[in-house]
Length: 138
Image (spheres, one colour):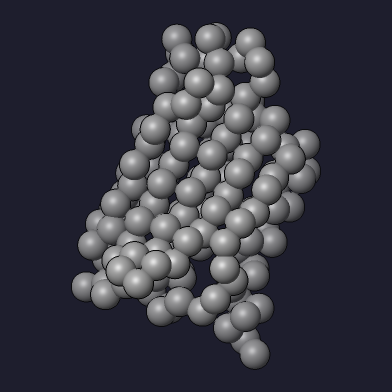
């Protein structure tokens, strides 16, 4: 019974952080058990990613999606800035809320330690962060 509650904890904390910042969030994906090392790593990436969106993105919406395939598990965090903000922000930081500092470096290191990856994709109105972990983590 502890495991489902532990799985909901980071998601609930992320949801509360977005709500309290006035950022509308959408959530997709299965809420199924994962191996503990993958689950713990994705929880840290989720919390760090949402923290970046809240603090730095100027976002009005954040879409979060989990996907669990036979070979890999992915977490996508996509922030959306209001119309007119994209042009202003792109000159200052092409990665929106996901500034390349200690937070992103830590996410990359945690994912890489398990054979995973982190990709940032600038979007017309924000940024998409894609974290991928292989099912057979090292």
